[in-house]
Length: 172
Image 1: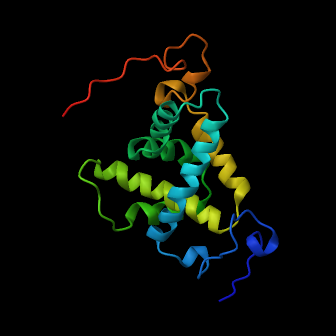
Image 2: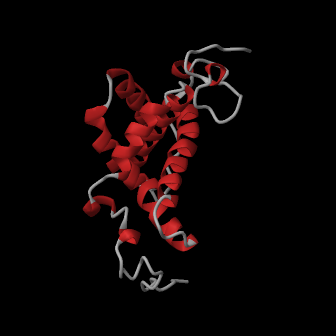
């Protein structure tokens, strides 16, 4: 099934692979949008972290979890909410109300907010709106340090930047 959309892969848009969605993005279930958005959001965060100076795997992983946990994504959505268009806010609402299993380790409200954020990123990606994804991702990564501490690795002499910070004890 061929779907032609301005700004999509057919028009030289931002898709990484030549596989357009089977339906218009607005017609996809919110969980499907969140499924795609999870990957898009994580890739944006990973690309940002690779732009920072410390590339040690454990540091990258620790930094990534500051952005991609349900709690962090819920906070990110809170910061993005005032910037959203009515169309985007509707996608967020649908994503937040989508029925899905919530892991036992997660707070239900934060998990729903995280799903909403992922649905938004999935919708924007599948709609070929790379510029908007970049705008929103920039807001997320430029969050105040007290919320996410995104760039600790940039501070010279910081024990975390050198990979020397104490590691928490493992519990068996």
